[in-house]
Amino acid sequence: MPVFYTDPKLGLSPDEVAARPPKLDVLVFGPHPDDAEIGCGGILLKMAALGYKCGIVDLTAGEMGTGGDVETRREESRDAARVLKLQVRECLELPDCGLEDSFDMRSAVARTIQRYQPDVVLGPYYDLPPGRGLGHNDHIKGGLMVAHGVNYAHLRKLDSVYQPWYPKAVYYYFLPMDLMPTFVVDVSDHFDAWIESIMCHVSQFGRPEQNSGIRPFFESLATRWGRWAGGRYAQAFYSPWPLSCRDVLSAARVFGPPDPKVNDEV
Ligand SMILES: [Zn+2]
Image (cartoon, rainbow, N blue to C red; front, side):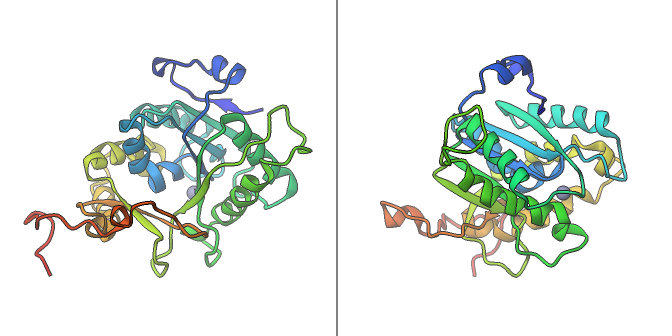
């Protein structure tokens, strides 16, 4: 049974979400409670500012994490949902460190997609060397579960109380350094709030004053693609399928006037 974290101040109580799930524009699946923030926090804030309805579904409660316990991590997830202006956040409470790309777990993802009818789904990138860090079992298996769950969501014979649904696109975050992103998104205007959402997870990162290195770390990652996105900070994503555009210029690299605070023109 999913656990809903939605902040009633955003308009929907957890009971209302359970009874009448809102249709979302963007739905991010995170293997552990802080992953969606790290991988997609900037674009979630940007999409919310544009008026889109966004949500996060955590696949696990992060109970195997060295820091914190389930209740602490729930509170931190609620706080981060508030910062990110999410319409809904829930946790599927699948086993931390035990995600499997199985029929049952793919189906759990598919039913979640049917519940929220998102147009865009995001999940962790799946083709990684297994091990600590990005290649955590739950990141690899979670990415595969999302890939197959998006497909299963349209099946009429899936065991589900919801109607079939097929998202328009699925994109992946947590890209390895040697993978060229398919697209990058300028999140400069939302950088501070993005970091704030990550730092809600005190059990994982400590308090900002205790961990002065965390902001520069994420800043360096976001700076890598900022220039390509036409700003200072960006988040990068991979699409297994070609993206289409009506106006070729809309997909052209966005280099505005040189900003001396960003970089010297090269
Ligand atoms: Zn994780």
